[in-house]
Image (cartoon, rainbow, N blue to C red; front, side, top):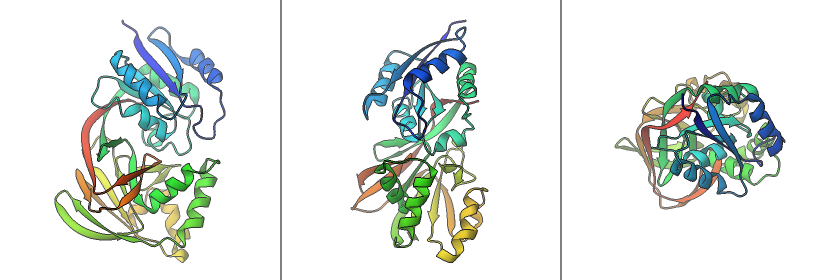
Length: 294
């Protein structure tokens, strides 16, 4: 049997883990099955290097490119794999790791690498907002503000994320958004709107409990501002997959959504803030990416 060719793309700046590139390479050597896989390890040197590496991997007909990092790294690697025969692998090493949680990717290094050895592949949907693809979730409004503040913070992890939300929430005012959802135009007042391909932001906070990455639709989550005194009752719903049953979240399944605005907005794209000029067109691309799952 011909061996699979695998490239591990490691972002050493991702998340709270402090494993050095050498330590990671040693762990790959310990757990990879050399009988079925030939592999290389590449360390990213700058912001766009992961994208360059994945583009070259497709040209070289590499079978699997494994993103070792958080959701931003996964997005950067995956955007060149969409619509190709090269599959995406994930070893979660970031802060939120939303897509890894959704796909049940192991967080234990040995188990994560073992899933690469087995090479079980799922064909998943992706979504494109204007010319930028995302795999897990994108958002506008308060969601994007938090992503922007988080990206500019030197500290990572759940505590930093929670502190930003707590600091900004009280003063943030919901906005009116004019949307066309699969041809139906309406106005919605929202704290934020999430366009969910997977079920969560990360940290196991589930905003779209019924979302699936291979169901041919995105879940448009229109979230109202929760009164301060109600937050202790509503917030836990994010962690027990019940937030959609509260009166503060409406979810509409859609294939295409247009956000009608001429303003320049910050959009949270797989956890990374991206400044974009409206209007914004979110379009689901069905079954467009191969991803390795356990």
